[in-house]
Length: 178
Image 1 (cartoon, one colour):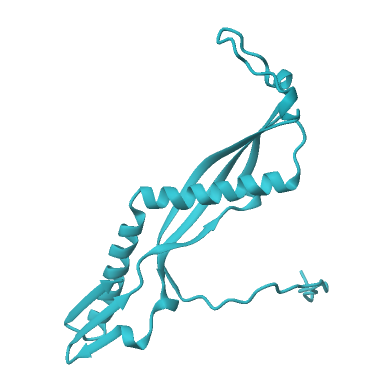
Image 2 (image 1 turned 90 degrees about the horizontal axis):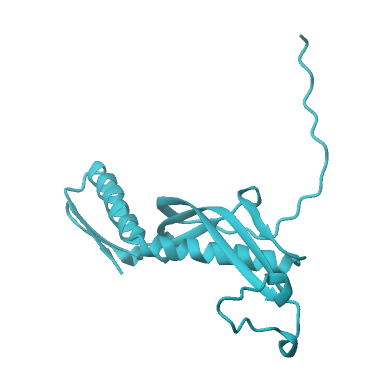
């Protein structure tokens, strides 16, 4: 076999944003979430209320359409070090004291390949699907807080910094989150 030269086709590249990242990600949470929305195709005056409990009218008779999506999210939690400055460090002989920003949700990733339409009744505009995807991202961030992962991220950050500064020769490492 003869080695072939590598050729790269020219393509357009658009840079929309360049952002310097100063983040310490200490927890990544993976989750599968469901989001749904219902809309009516009928004007308010023409909607038929289901007033009799034993009678359940089909959604299409009521003029309702439903969209349900399932998404796999990855939520990164940790310390945003852009809030860290030289004033946040105090060194006295073999002791160091750090004031770090509190842990927060740094990013919620929802890849297009990780989103499945579970139920789609009627036609939906891309804006409606995008709104549901944003709902999934918000739910993922909220679940991280509810599960106590912000506190775990701070504990992990404290462990990482303590180990690092002990290896650098400091015998006493104090870390404060504010």
